Each structure stands twice: as C-alpha cells, then as structure tokens.
Length: 350
Image 1 (cartoon, helix red, strand yellow):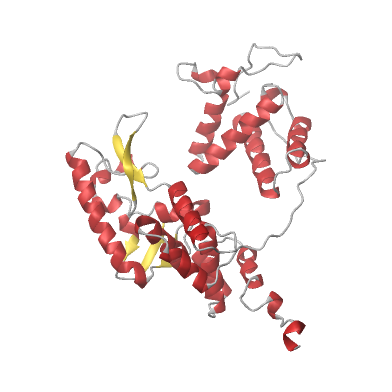
Image 2 (tube, rainbow, N blue to C red):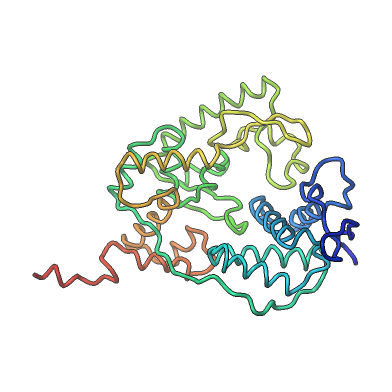
C-alpha cells in the first residue's frame, strides 16, 4: 500500500502483526522503513503543521498503538478507533477538546500516512461538553500581579495583558516584529499559522527599547564566541543562509543558556521558555493573595474583557485575538464586569 509502514514480524497474543517497543522509541540506527512514527512526523512537517501539533499527534498515535497491544495500525479500523476514543471519555474522563485532538491525530495516521480510508466513526461515546467561563482579572488585580514581577517576566506579562498575546507569542517575539513608530506588534505564525497586528502598550515601550539594547550586546558576544543567532522559521535558513547573524531576527527575550542543534551541531540561543514565565506569574498571583485561579492566559482574557467594557466592538477584539470564529470571542460578553448578564441583584435593593 502506497506510503504506509510495512508489516512487522513480531506476533502478540493474537495473530496480528505487532510493533516492537524499540520501534516506537524511534532510536537512531534503525532502518527508516521501520519507523512508523518517523513517517508520521514527515507527513506532518510536509503539511506545515506546527511543532506543538506534531508533538501532540505523535503522542496520541503512540498511545493508540500501545492501547491495542502494539498491533500495527494497518490491521485496525473503525472498531479499534471507536474503542480507544470511547475509552478516553469513559475511563480517562478527558475533556472534549482532548478527545477531539486524539481523534484528529488517529484519523491523520490512517488517511495521510497509511492511506487507509476511514469513514465517519460511529458509536463513539463523547466527553460531556461543559461551557466554562474564562478567569478575568479586575484592573487592580492585574496591577498587583505586575507589581510583583520584574525583568523579562514583567515585560512578557504586560504584553499578554496590553496586547492580548498568548504565552508562546510573547516569549517568541523577534526584534523585527516590534514597530515603535506605529506602536504595534506583528504576531507571526500565531495559533493556526495566522499573522495579526496588535497594539504595543506605550507604558512598556521604554523598557522594550532597553531590552533591545541588552539583546544587541549579548548577540555581539555570542557571535564572537562562535555561536549562531536564533534559528529561523521554516525554510528561511535555506533561502537566507546568513539571516540568523542579523540582529533583527533575534528573539526579544533570549534564553540565558545556549543549546546545540542535534542535526548540525550549531550552537544557538533559544527564546525565554514559556514554563519559566508561567512559574513567575503563578508566584506573583500567589504573593498577591488573589482569590482567583489566575494564569498567564487570564491576562489575555482580561485584555479582551476590558476592551469590551471600554466600548471596543466585538469584531475588532476578534481580530486582535486572532480568533477564526466570532463565537469564540463572544464568550467575553458573558464576563463583563456588570454582574451576571448585566442584572442588578435584588438583594442590593434591601
């Protein structure tokens, strides 16, 4: 069958071909034809999916194979898919979005890698969908969090609240994408691979300029030490071989440590890790003694809600957040700071 991984000789308790655990581990030195997960990675990359999607899909496909006692997926079909996806809802009690992601990964495996047609999988028990309202902070609560942050975490937090950036978008900003003259930030390859423009808070412009100066000094030292600049997205490194040695392509918030690329051995400096930012914000929330379970994403939620409260139209907010569907943005109309549904409680009239 064209494009599919070959059968394996290992036999389990049933008569079905099985995949050895060593093959699922994708160890170096194995023949490429035996690496099913490598074929999955190749199919994902040729379609331009993000690295996070690749990691999620490979993880779910690995779990799917192990769930069915390492049987080769070419021997499976609708029944095995239904059994696994239903198991996630009934036994693991995963969220609906998680279940949908797992199903998308497995369908990708069958349709794009194995070239095995799979129709609509009927009989799946779906996870219960519950609408959850986002955690939104009051202006004073945002101020308390920012007061307890310093350095790079504070700058990133201000951008998440003042520009509506996601965590990854904030830490992976490049110098060329910050426009001080137009007071805007160009977000490249956001969720869904979409670009968008967002406002640059003037309150943080001075601090960002100083951050640029620190990056320029560090970059000069790195070049003298034999390091290359930040890795370029996609195939830009082939089109512009020396662009990584230009300041404009460097991250606004570089990491403290350098790393070595596994394939080339080139030493580079990645961007500030999002987990470090998340830990810093969590500590600030705890130190501020807030009663809300606020996270980095709560700053983005607060950005949208506060704009709506100040009269910004919902379509503009949709564009600033990068939402494809207006219904996703409409959730913020339910969390306006006016009480539930804008109704005054009768207890306030007593």
